[in-house]
Image 1 (cartoon, one colour):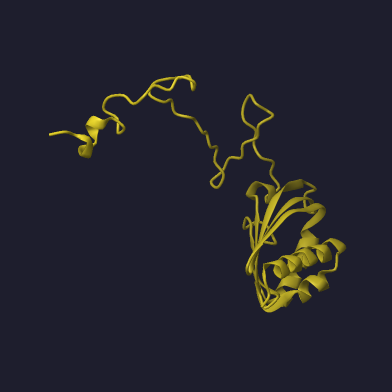
Image 2 (image 1 turned 60 degrees about the vertical axis):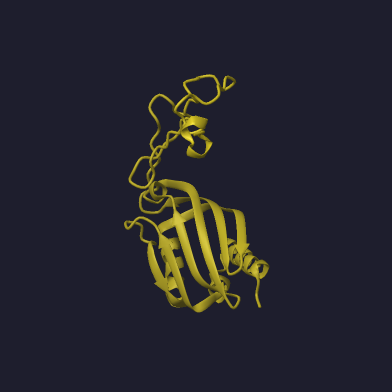
Length: 189
């Protein structure tokens, strides 16, 4: 039985082959009925589902026609059973308009009998559309991406019982859940 370590090594070997430009070695690591999915914006020519080795070969042809990859750094590869997940830092220049696109990629592999059976690639939507993330007004050092999938998330810490200072933590106020008079089992009859 092939375990997580072997599947992780297969992913490492496939990335090494891709880095050398040896697409044939990547194709050899695939199962015959591979399902290769690129979850990107629909305007991206490489988005979609590709079935079988021949279509995955076509996918790599589309990639080479669409972009010049300048950075493809595999940062993390994690494996658990038949699943392998990788985090990649990516940068490329779009051949059609000359724009630089960069950002993270996430790859999810599923292996079957030592061969890659499914592959899912997730890309940052504005990155793949050739757009730069919008900046927050007044704070150029902090970026915020706007859009239907990515929203600004403001996290605020609620004050405890009206105290604005974290070092002043008063006990429970009357009427709160921690008040023994509010707990039915603590009432005396």
